[in-house]
Image 1: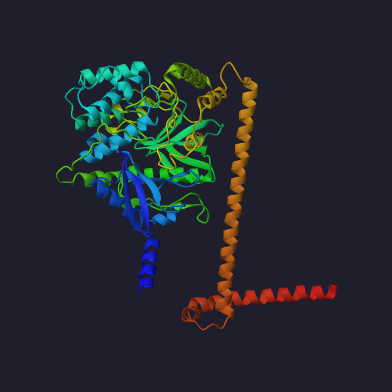
Image 2: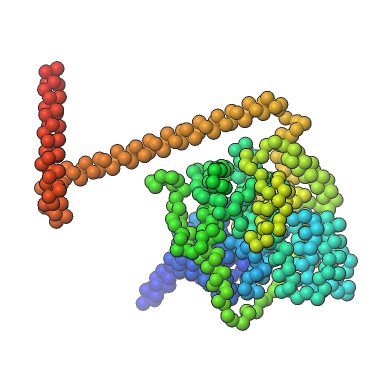
Length: 570
């Protein structure tokens, strides 16, 4: 009896596993779930723990043993998606940024978006000018420590906060000035709401960067935002397409293609190369989900998407969930007392620290910051002067990342949009995913997001960009570009030939299957009900006597003739 009980308890343990999810405030939620539990079950548990109703903007992210990030697919089993062994570690993150976060219905949702944007600011994904950075940081200060108090906040108190990967003493003083003079009296809710209003106007709002290479081998970051598809290179947004202009997304191996229809007579195809096939597939899935969420009117319009033009090749994926318009309609129907929000206050965060009671965290010492800043700016100047950029059209300021209701007020001047004074490097700090944080090599952690591992490597990569005064001459550049264009044309021709051959193979296979079925119908003695019904139809009998029998006699005659020739030769 005791042995049966032990064996039963062991089987129950084998059917269950522990799962830890790190939340946006860096607290951890641990639960035990069944081995066949789906992602939706875990997500519902987390939302119930947070008392969150507007949950469609969020998702669960995990990292596989190859350091590739993934979004947990809710309709599928968790155990089948994870490539590692339990216990599993994941994190809750914002997956679909709301177009107007300050207009969200509930304060708990706005607070979670605020935590995500604060994290984006710290990790270098949300870039801004120095004046905007000071205002955003001051609002974070006001939300976390309240009004300025000379007794509690001595001179230089803002230097104990880490808002950005790197910042200067001048910026710290400006943050303190705004906090002291302009934000006095604001509640945490008001400060967070004002922070969201300012953050949503930034051009990198909602950017979750995917490192890639363009056709010329230059590094670029691809991202999907609430307003469209964006490409970032250096400190510039070199391309932007609205969701209404994006028609198709597909990938093959490491190559990612985006098809756009910008007007009646202008179509374009953008091609980029991901570091690995897995990274390219993740990029494609993210694009499919964002396009469905922001572009469609109803979730009933969602269709299964294939990564290839041919049905027998490539991956197939379908977005599961509500679209943005349905989410906003559902949010308008929420009627309940606002849930209580437990703000951590002065508790320091592990991956996105607010206040630290020791030396301020920084990727480089304060004494070296000025030299590093100068080196970065030199690299940016060479990047601005370089003729090598993504071969796509420039965008106007009217297509920047701002809500649609305010897009008409933007400046309409042409040219590349300069986002910040610094290069776009979203991994200046530790990676935002909770994988092996205590044992991971710093060089490996930076390579997850595809950014340089050190300032020296960063300078070398930027110095390798040809400028107007260095590098090959115009004739050599033209020859190189001509050679690359010829290679791209050859690759496209090879892909076309392969597609035609596959199509011919499928056609021949279908014809052989039809011929086999015809032989079974006419020559076999199989007495099956559906075959008997087909044989008894007048159309089939007419086909059998007028076409098939003469064809069979002709084929038999030819075979006998060929056989007689072979016998004579022997």
